[in-house]
Image (cartoon, rainbow, N blue to C red; front, side):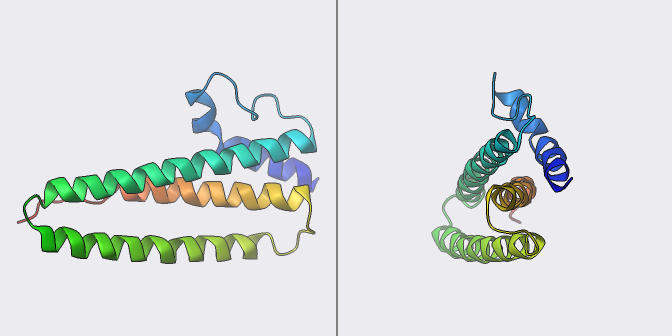
Length: 135
């Protein structure tokens, strides 16, 4: 039963990712191994997208504050610190969510699914930053 719950969660978390590529490990998930592969794919994809969203944010900051090197430097340092802290909280929260699971592939799949979901949420948040005017 627990495997089925994680299968559903992994499938939901990957809806956006699956449409971006022709074939993914999340197509036709029927076994625990396929669920694990899908969750790992989801995490890897979400973390890659998170890194891209963060890099894009830094570029937007450079454009927004062009010619204001002190502001760019200060804000970039703050963003890097915030991102480091956020990743620590994300990892800790996901460890709490998977606390009751025994080590092994079901635990790994649940942890990867949690990390993917949190990373997707963070990517969306980062995409909203740096869009205000710099009056």
